[in-house]
Amino acid sequence: MDHRLLLTGFSLLVASVLLSVYGYLASDGGLLGIGFSAMVLSAVLVVLAYEPNPQTREALASYITTLSKALAGVLEDLDLLPPRVRVVCVRDKKLLVVSKSVIEPAGPGIGVVGGAPYLALSLEDLGLEVQSLDTVTGEQVELCVERLVGELLEASDVSVRFSGDTVRISLYGVPDMLNELSIYPVNPLVVATLGATSRCLRRNLTLIDYSKSGRDHHIAIEVEGYVE
Amino acid sequence: MWNRLRAFVLTYTALSCLLNAVLYLMAEKRPDAYISTNILAFYTTYALYRPLKRASPKVKLLHVAMLTLFLAIAVYRVYRVVVR
Image (cartoon, rainbow over all chains, first blue to last red; front, side, top):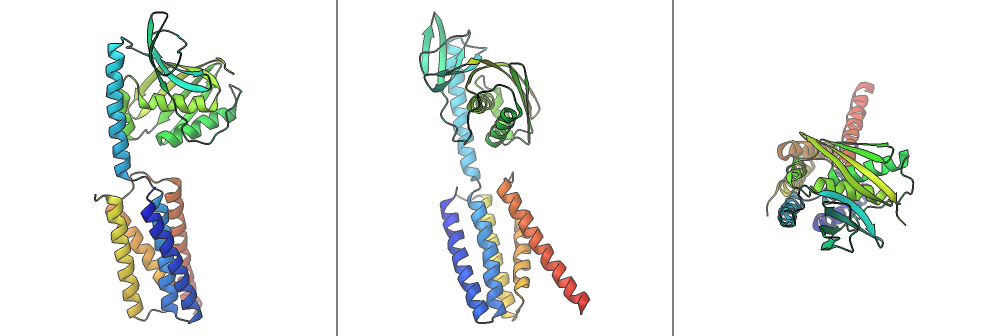
């Protein structure tokens, strides 16, 4: 959000309202018109103030690319490629766990469990307002995941389907910036989808399949047992 | 640092001020003339710069509101001409 643009917009709105009132009281159609015109301009400024600045997006893309490259290097060194990606709830914290086998990590970071190395990243609160749902299936969960994933990834269409304990999420028309990042082993797109799905469900998740076709991405997630 | 969005805002604001000044100097008394020219200035500048790669729901709502307002003004003016 651009605070300067927002402040300018609101200031102009106040000034235009005052000008319109004065124009009305003075019976001056010209001043009234200028006041209304300025109101339109202020509305445009306020709306645009909420739009993400393209420079912010570019900076974020640059940051994600650097992070993805660094993580790819770490995974290579730990011999975790190809990775098994899961979201695990550990002591009320959600961790993205990258390992070769199914393990229960002690906490975030790099570790070894039973001789098997793993990399665990803390999935911070995505800042999205949603109530966690306890049931695996149901339209509510599908809508929840669709909304979160659509909001996060700005895909032109999102489809979520539950079949048993597997949820299949398809993202259509993913923006180019995110599409280009899908080449990395810790795919930011998959991470965001897993994070959004885990936000809706209080369950451990395992990525079981991922495929890409142009700007369409298909992700299959297995929902594991209930976690308190 | 310059970017499309800022260039659009600056151009649209300048154009809006210029058009309002011209209309006022021409002693235009109809408020809807000011609003409709402002909306035209918005779309002209928007078409030139294309500041947003992807319009959010708020921006789409703004487009709907602007177009509805413009249409309402146009219909009202046509109605006034026809009734006369």
